Image 1 (cartoon, helix red, strand yellow):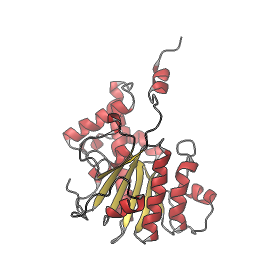
Image 2 (spheres, helix red, strand yellow):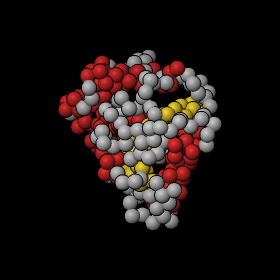
Image 3 (cartoon, one colour):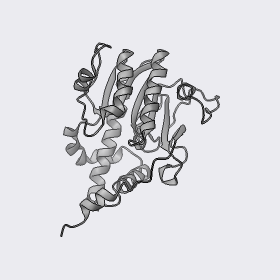
Image 4 (cartoon, helix red, strand yellow):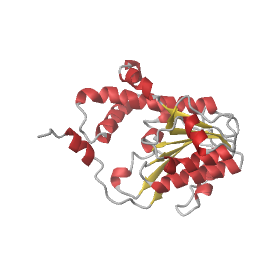
Length: 263
């Protein structure tokens, strides 16, 4: 899908450029997608700094977040609202998304009078998405195969093959829900900022696939370290902002333990 470049002639920001300047160098854009690694604390700091930078300049139309479900928002909420009131408005799930990590970015938007919008597919709609075969046609053939492989590897190759199709539909439905949230919040001359996992922000497979070609979109991968496993296909993002590597961790250990037959 053709994406409008916005600042087509500008040079990319250097790796040591402050985050606000890096974000502003990607504008103008109708939507800016930051794709994080969920367990990298520095990524949530970058998200807060980006919210603050755009809001301070009057450029932030809305903050859309994967961390809350579609239909929840802080629209019309008093900028002086308490954190508890904001969490209630967003239907916050502390077990899934620690408020200590994401609250600072959310509250930065609220304090600036910018609406925070839940963008994720509601859990109540996931079962229907699993059986909605129309979702299989939302991506091109190669992109759909790549999304299936991403689901397979993302579940440590432990999912039964019969579950790959339904789980891929959920992923596509989530991307589509986030795209619809962006479109509803679109404001001429301003930018909708989406915070999500990097897979949702990738141009070839994620949210951008469900946005119209006349929407100027910029995508950023927040990458902890430079390990080959963390990198995606060339051109998947307009920019990659690297942060220090995290301690090595076997993310599949817990899933393997669950999959092993109990004696």
